[in-house]
Amino acid sequence: MHTMNRSFRQHMALTLAAMWITVLPAGAAWADDDDFRGAPLDPLYLEECGACHVAFPPALLSQRSWGAVADGLADHFGTDASLDPETLQTIRRYLDDNAGRRRSDGADGRPLLRITDTRWFRKEHRPGEHGLRSDTFSRPEVGSAANCAACHRGAEEGRYGEREIRIPTPGSAR
Ligand code: HEC
Ligand code: HEC
Image (spheres, rainbow, N blue to C red):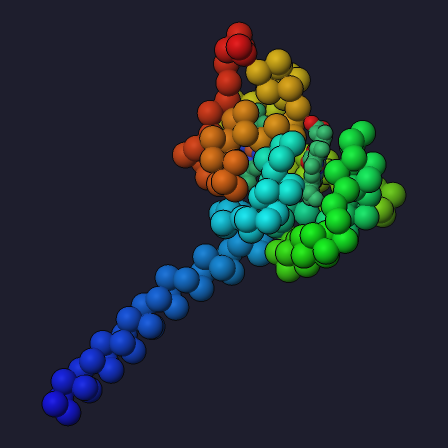
């Protein structure tokens, strides 16, 4: 009986240790824009901020930028995306907790409102690399750089891994 208990405890300790080893690096990478992996998106965020476009990964903008986006929802890129105060507060907290650590300010020092305007995005999507051309984003099949899901097949669920990228070919628009 004693030996069984001990081996069970040993087994549990090993299992827990293994869990930490696998869980920790993924969590650490999530907060770093350069090592972007994607993480499950909060259901409320997915519902409210994924209604008109994909729910953008919080790690791709700074806290300051998300704050500015949240402050401006009544006039959000030409639409009214305002939320009731309670929902707004919950989403704000989620964005704050999961924002990227890198600054996303414009040349004027004010926080950028667009992921697609950040240095990180431009570098990652530079024309001439990975099949991207200067006109790729304006093609009718894509429409805008903000239309992440045109190329990132897992974008609706917040996945942007390289294996799920497919750039639409010209003329494939329906
Ligand atoms: C009523 C529709 C609507 C809702 C709801 C909405 N958005 Fe948007 N959002 C837009 C439009 C339109 C754009 C501009 C898209 C474009 O340029 O192609 C946009 C663009 C953005 C961008 C910039 C994308 C880029 O990098 O170019 C961010 C960030 C953003 N929205 C965040 C949010 C967040 C956070 C919420 C939830 C609080 C939200 N949106 C809810 C309509 C909406
Ligand atoms: C026209 C197609 C296209 C659109 C639209 C697009 N991307 Fe990409 N994205 C790419 C390509 C191509 C790469 C480079 C993949 C590589 O490094 O091999 C990439 C790379 C990335 C990466 C890095 C992936 C990795 O594992 O290295 C992230 C994150 C990403 N994009 C996010 C976004 C987000 C967020 C949006 C929308 C705001 C977006 N992309 C819009 C094509 C696109």
